[in-house]
Image 1: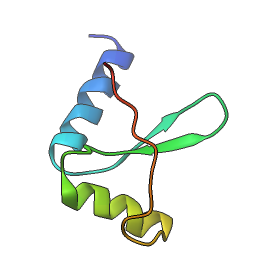
Image 2 (image 1 turned 90 degrees about the vertical axis):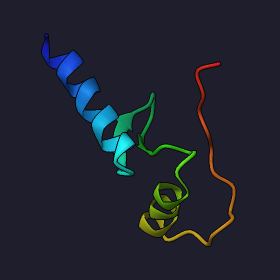
Image 3 (image 1 turned 180 degrees about the vertical axis):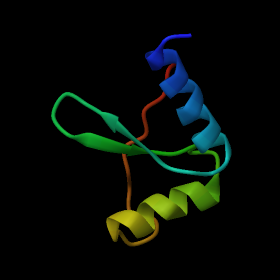
Amino acid sequence: MNDFQAEIRKCLEVLSAGGLILYPTDTIWGIGCDVTDEDAVNKVYTLKGMPQGRPMVCLVAH
């Protein structure tokens, strides 16, 4: 397994445990979580200092 695959596996472990990840985009770093995990989503709001319920971008594969 190469380093990239190991990093992806680690990200999946973190996401599955309700944690947050950082990922690069074309211009900035994104904060990621499992959008189906309400506690994880609340962690993003808290980290960003955003009021609960304020819209956020959600990226999906399909």
